[in-house]
Length: 617
Image 1 (spheres, rainbow, N blue to C red):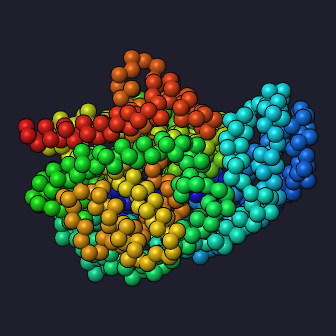
Image 2 (image 1 turned 45 degrees about the vertical axis):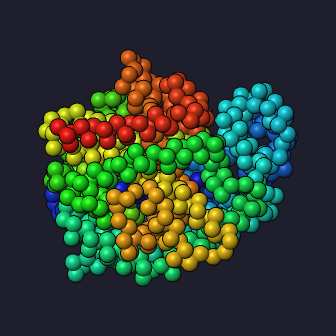
Image 3 (image 1 turned 180 degrees about the vertical axis):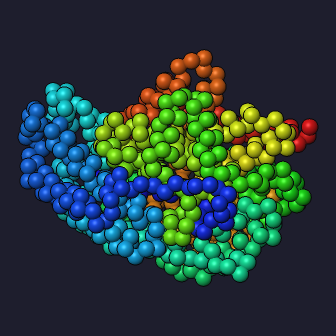
């Protein structure tokens, strides 16, 4: 059923808290969660919780032990009706859980929000005990019986993509009582440690220039033009991370062991196989992607950072210089209204429908943009449920990267709106394809800005920033994936110390970043703040998958004479109803082809070539 919140996107080094730009940003929007419920005390919220519980009990009473019979039936007594009832309940639970999760994300430091989030999670977990039988019992039906039901009954046939996907889980499911135990114990296990991570991270403060600031402000200072300010921020981050290492080490060890236990019981062979299954992508495809990116390290990150060190007048950059702006980079703050028009204009240039959908996020209160204490870090777009609408969270500080983050999350939002027509069970796109629209939205915005830039120095700065963003999305995320693989593999041999984890982190980062970046003391703790390692193990390769895929997709768009937009919207509207091979075929692309990833990486290499040419000119 519905999860409360997606993993937040951590941008190059992120963005939140008390806004240092004051009124320069203009009026920043705060989302209208009243579209879901007026407040936690709204009678409608209490009524829906009670209604959900009653519906769950009624669903169990009607269908438990009767799916074999339903598979032979039609209409109101058929399997399709059972799935439709399940979908209606999923939609309601999505609305309830999203309201609690988004309220919590608005201010994780507020104890009332934490209590609401925890109480709703506990309530929905208890309620789900009445529903857990459904997928398990459905998967115990014989293939021939399910195939016959889909062929005979139109309502059952409608859910074919969902049924086919669900049955891929069949080899890994346990008996009903074990599944219920796993689900209920999850609240006091993995979910509890996830919440501990969130609340700990939100409460951390970093001493910079005599002031205690939250994480996002400290991370944002790593992009300051002044190298001393970057160094001060890096040292403050390292100092606070070091002080809290015991907590983060415990959380990481516990969750890695928890996953190992789950994988062993379910029979997953590889430590990332459960993620691949959830993403509906083959292990061989991900292995080919990771291999292609690792082999490209020297041509991409190593080469670029060597150039950047020269531009900054250094032989070797310190790790806090990695995201430093180039001297040519404009330092003006970008007001919110300008960011809005920049993104919508780029979207409009591709397709008016895309800009119209994105415009609703601004006009109808679907975005939360201001930085403030307690707000969830990073950025995300949450689909909520098809009967409602998505919400976008960003932490806007007026930097060029913040505009790109806005374009990214609105791409997700457009995708979620278009896929909603598939219904609650089939609208959710696997993570590997979920990044397609977001990265494509970024690319459209970048290209629109680059095309209107005539000044050589400004063009160089824009190209460099795009290359860095792509390195952060592809190289850095595959390095994160490699870090997770090594960490989870090592954890099988016993508990890891903070030094053990730090050593793995430094080894992987050194390989990916190359010799032009000095990983000095303190950097060994920087694994602690990455939320994906905690909330969504092995999620990170989806970013690299999406970026390389979009690079290839954009190359097709540039060469297309017509019809690309229509095919692109069909891809987005499909939601989770098609495999990546089916969705990419109309564009002549095949992710199972090893050369596919090389094509995507060649676009990054081409931008670095252009930077070198500008440097020589």
